[in-house]
Length: 410
Ligand SMILES: *[C@@H]1O[C@H](CO)[C@@H](O)[C@H](O)[C@H]1NC(C)=O
Ligand SMILES: *[C@@H]1O[C@H](CO)[C@@H](O)[C@H](O)[C@H]1NC(C)=O
Ligand SMILES: *[C@@H]1O[C@H](CO)[C@@H](O)[C@H](O)[C@H]1NC(C)=O
Ligand SMILES: *[C@@H]1O[C@H](CO)[C@@H](O)[C@H](O)[C@H]1NC(C)=O
Ligand SMILES: *[C@@H]1O[C@H](CO)[C@@H](O)[C@H](O)[C@H]1NC(C)=O
Image 1 (cartoon, protein in one colour):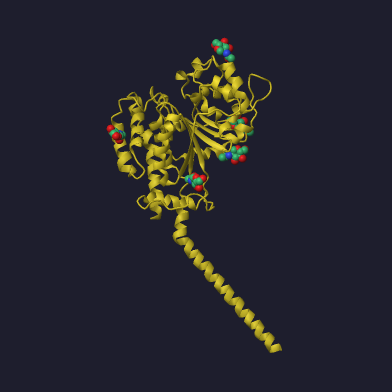
Image 2 (image 1 turned 90 degrees about the horizontal axis):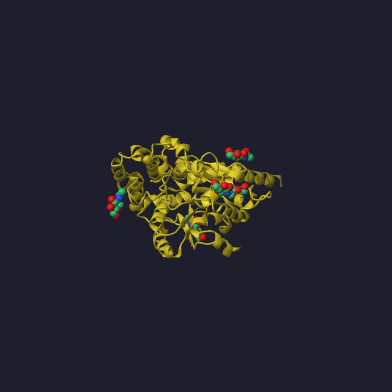
C-alpha cells in the first residue's frame, strides 16, 4: 500500500515538473515571437506619437490592395491599435465641389486614425461627391455621409425664415448630429498639412469648462476687423475665426450659456434664435459673428489654439505676423477670400493645386513636394512667397512620416 502511495507521489512530482517545463517553453517561444514581427509592429506604433498603443481588435479589417504597400501596412497597424474615429464636418454650397474634395483628400492622405466625414451639401453637389468618394473607398480609412442643408426638425420653418441656410448650417451641427460626441468643423477652403489626428488630440487638452476651440481672427490688431469695425461684442482682442472649429458637442449640448438677452442661462438650441433676432442688423460675417458674441459672454468655454492651426492670407499679405507658423510651419492652411482660385496669392494657389493634382498612389516626394517647391520659388516677389518655407515645413514632415511608417515594417 505504502509503495503504491510512493509511486503515486513520484508520478505526481514528475507530472508537475513536466508541466513546469512545458509552461517555461511556451513563455520562451512567446517572447521570441514578440521580439520578432510583433516587436517591430510595436516599435512602429511607438513612433506615432498621436496613436495610443492599446489593442482592441477594432478598426479596418481587411488588408489593402497589393499595389499600395503603404496603405496595406497602415491597415494592419490600425487593426492592432485603438482607433478612435475622428469626425469631420464641412458645408458645401455653390461651386465648392472640387475645393471640398481637395480638403477631404488632404485629410485622408496624412491622417492615422479612421475618419468619418459629415458632408452637408446643396442637392446638386451630392452626385459629384458620391462619384469621387466612392472611388476612394478601397482605402478603407474613412467613411462618409452626405446630408442636405438642413435645420433641426423642431421649428424648421421658423429657422428658415431667419437664417440663410448655407451660411448658418455649422451652428446647428450639435443639434443635428445628436449621436456624435466631438466634431472638427472646417470650411471648404481648408487644407490639412498635418494629420487630422494632431488637431483632434487637442480635445483631450480641454479643461473642464472648455467646449470648443478656435484660432484668433487676427494676430495684428492694427489690421484686425472686429476691433476696428464690429457693432457687436466679440471674443478677446481681435475676435475668433470659425473656419477651423473643434467642438466637444456633448458639452455644447449640455451647457447653459450666459447671454445679454435674459438673466436666465440658455442652452445651445435656445440661444440661437433670440441672438439672431437681437443682432441681425449689426452682424457682417454671419454665424461667425454669433459665435463671437456667444464666447464673449462665455470666455471660459473657449480653447484658443495658435494661428498655425488656421493660417490665412491675413497672416502674411502685409508681412508675416503668425509667430507659431514662423517657428513650426503651417499645420492647417485656410485659403479664404478665394485665393486658391485667383492669382493674388500664388503661394496659396500652388499648395492647393499640388494637393488637388496628386493621387493616393503617387510618390509624394517626387510628384508633389519637388514640383511644389519649384513652383514656390516663382512666388518670392510676394510677402507670402518670401516665407514660402513655412508652407512646406510641416507638409514635408507629414510626407516623410507617412513613408517612415510603412518602411519600418518592410
Ligand atoms: C465604416 O463603416 C463601416 C460600417 O459602419 C464600419 O464597419 C467600418 O469600420 C467603418 N470604417 C471606418 C474607417 O471608420
Ligand atoms: C447695433 O449697432 C448700433 C450702431 O453702432 C448700436 O447703436 C446698437 O446698440 C447695436 N445693437 C446691438 C444689439 O448691439
Ligand atoms: C467631451 O466631453 C464629454 C463630457 O465632459 C466627455 O465625456 C468626452 O470624453 C469628451 N470627448 C472627448 C473626445 O474628449
Ligand atoms: C479653462 O481655460 C479657460 C481659458 O484659459 C479659462 O478661462 C477657464 O477659467 C479654465 N477653466 C478652469 C475650470 O480652469
Ligand atoms: C496641376 O494640373 C494642371 C493640369 O491638370 C496643371 O496645369 C498644373 O500645372 C498642375 N499644377 C501643379 C502645381 O502641379
